[in-house]
Image 1: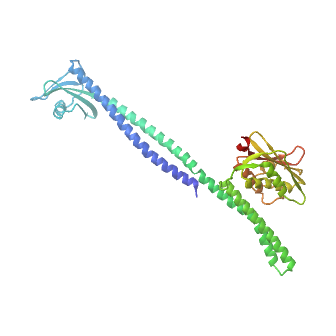
Image 2 (image 1 turned 30 degrees about the vertical axis):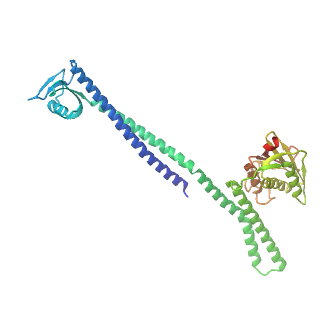
Image 3 (image 1 turned 90 degrees about the vertical axis):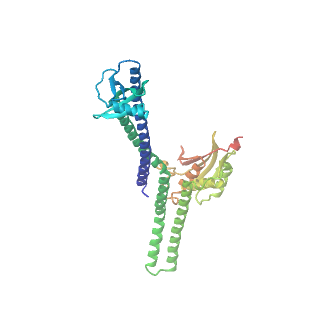
Length: 389
């Protein structure tokens, strides 16, 4: 799936819809503004007529009679020659108060007021050039505002489309990483299986040689199985499918249980606990995380100690060993997927899974070295509210 193309398509659709909506609003606003400006022109013409009726001298205003052959008399100065009889007849016969007409390319607005005689009226004309200029300026401002709004809404559409596709991008990235990690994890054991099988089938061999070859294939298959299972478990934790079933849990008892459960031919694991520490955690998941860290330590040390401590907010499980400790350059990457500071251990996923387990509990896990030598890993989990009450 091409997310960039999809984002562009969504942004274009959003922009088109926004353009239609903004265009409609701009048209309504322009027509409303035009109507208001022309209304102001009519009010100005009407005020001129009222002044003429009051006996004041006004420009381009006439007293018009349509009786008989018709009669017109200018009230003040006049520099236009409108069809007075036609305009006045239309006004009086149709009951119109205002009107607009074009004379020699110039638009004029007329206002009519009937006099006491039903065939006579005062008619005033004003030029609409300034009002039309105002209308044009208003339309230009509205058009520029509409274009700006369309550009802004299109940019917002691009941003919103990107944000809305973030979960999809995350899922696709997880799928891509899972496939790459699975290929990475299966490549070596499959190569071992293929090489061992090809080598064994190349010629007739003794029973012991067949047994040795099958043992090598079995070990490689076990490694592939363990790696795929750990990878699936990590994917479940990353996707939120493995949610912890939180309940009050005693870290001191968990430390003693893990110490008793982990056995190694060349290392001693002991628990050093002297007080009760209760946290809110999923027993199975947290036990898995602590066990993983302890097993990582016994591969590289002769003695591993599990102790517990607590702060104001967290309970802590502290795993220390007497080995060489972490290399300085490896400490920031201890919990990265497939990171191996040495060739000991298995897939390189165990510590990454341990960190993810701690994170889904709302806790933290930190790796470092002790001042006197040896590695130290501190797992912090929020303390149980029930224990504090």
